[in-house]
Amino acid sequence: MSGPTYLAYDYPLLSAFWTMLVFFLWIMWFVLLFRVIADIFRDDELSGWAKAGWLVFAIVLPFLGVFVYVVARGKNMGRREVAQARAQQQAFDSYIRETAAASGGRTTSVDELTRLSEIRARGDITDEEFRRAKELVLSGSGAPER
Figure 1 (cartoon, helix red, strand yellow):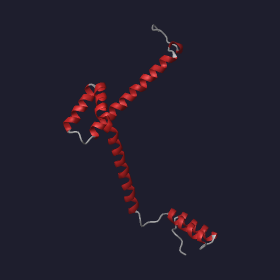
Figure 2: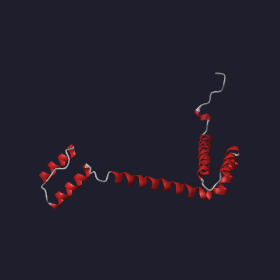
Figure 3: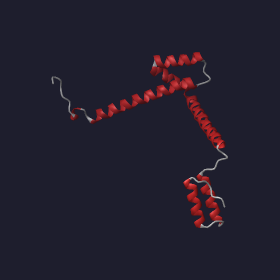
Figure 4: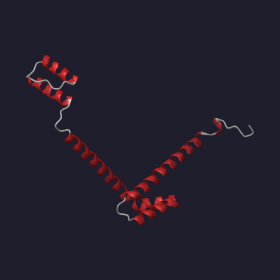
């Protein structure tokens, strides 16, 4: 061991704090860089050459490119992100509606148990009949005939 040995007390607490701060700022910088690059590709208003220009500017001079992009087009970045989130939510909602409509004629055991519970609440069947019907539904035999 020809080099010096560093112990924990050789690295003061304030230096650890600054190291962590620089590390997290570095990570935040990369997050911002990737969000700007994603926004460049997401923007439908930009032509292909404009996208290429912004992309080259952000890659060749990253700090200046990202700073200029955020100042020049940052206001619409949030709007585009909100529009994309709404589009994804609408696509998900339409998928759920289509899936639910496709299985519209079939009843599940939950539907059968709900219907049995309503019949028992009206007093049309006794608790013993409800218990037997529930066992039939849960066993997979189907809905009991009345």
